[in-house]
Length: 292
Length: 167
Image (tube, rainbow over all chains, first blue to last red; front, side, top):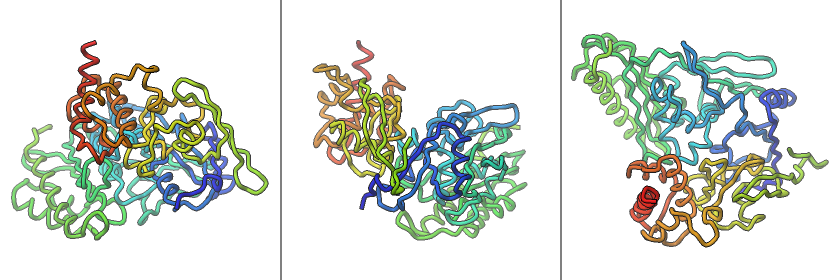
């Protein structure tokens, strides 16, 4: 049953300051909407209770990407198209550029935002494993000021976050120290466009001599929140990449995840795919040209 | 901006934007889908509704030059925007080159996906005038067709690119 637009209020303040003032006046009373690629789907399905909504689409304060010598600061209102077309994101943060390119189709990439993907907090969100791998930091804003939260601490459970009712994500900060890493990103889904991932991976690593160094493996759709494989990372660090290590990494990774059966896939399929992706990443790390 | 009525329900708002080059003002609930405003108030029924959830691309329009699914755009977010629908591509009887190419290559059957396909193709060719087949497939990957099997559609986009290169 479709929702009736007469049951919803929607306002569109022209500045970030006006939006956070509105949120502060009645915390929890206003639902922010950016590009609508999640909220409008709920609305269309009659699953969004009648409420007051505030548009944050195209707020200039949220729609910029700044590059400084140490970091890149991505406004939470940047779209996937903004990300995939940005030269520094493409060059230094390819995991994020790849994820942005396989989310939805072109029309959804033109509207869906990085901040929306984070706040919507789906375990299947395609951009979030990349944020885990890059150890992103979020800047949250409210009338009380700004606070910083490492992304790894932001998702506290299935669709749960640390965002207070009067807060918005303002910026996603990524340190510029991964251009020498081998990057591996892959989505496994029914098709590349539109379909939601069965499993997605974002991984980074370096190889010194024959051994693995500074490895980061993050997965989506295998647990209630996007997951970094700390135990697998620890086990492979410092070791040469050989068939023994591949088998160990596969086994450890499968033990670390908590995949479920759902409409898109099965627990068993997801576990098998995760093992294969880990092996493919380590093989890529082994054969990639050595960058000291 | 919406004024609240005494009941707490939103009042109808005036929203203005440009559609196919003409400045229009509509009285709407701000959460009305742009798709419904275009079809019901402005009688621009070339924009189709397929899935209504951003999966099929039938309702594609250009919003400030960007391809969007109009079923996912609250009309208030189109305030002041420049909107192009399928009705805005042809110049009178003179079809757009993408429309000509779809005719020539048999890129349309039942016609429901066709306006969205043509706008997605137009959007792609503006950014990539000489696309590879992979770029064509990706550019149209958010637009579903259940009739043609896509091959004639991809051929039509390639034909439109060649036609432009030749003229």
